[in-house]
Length: 175
Image (cartoon, rainbow, N blue to C red; front, side, top):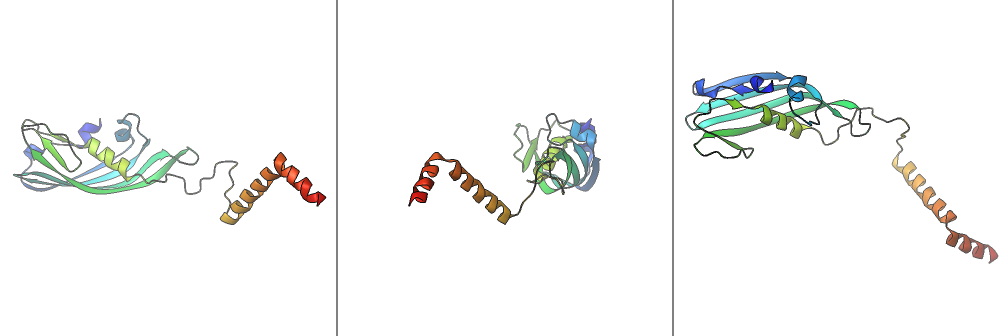
């Protein structure tokens, strides 16, 4: 399960910087229900600095994931890159994680980073998710000039089919 892959038993760590690396794949992404990510492979580098005040975590996430293509809805692979950091403080009062600061109680001994890593990958998804050469069957891509001509022709056809324009055309022909 993904929790075991991304849990850190921080209480046993000495003060200073510690490095962690994970290769997360299809099994990791499958653990998140209703995900727009179907699978993939990402490499996570984490530099965790432990001090008396708390923890500082610096993430670097890179790889590729499979999502639905925005154009044809077939599965496509997109690149993801994410670098960010956040801090962990210790306290008795439970406080919600705000994206920059996480609070852990004194009885907690492990830090589960699965949700944070997953959400970081989702945030790293490009806005446009398409195959490099995606063109659904029956779709023809046209240039701007062709589009303007087609649009103008369409407007002219609408006018020609309109009975009011027909009356004006007949009136013009009589003059």
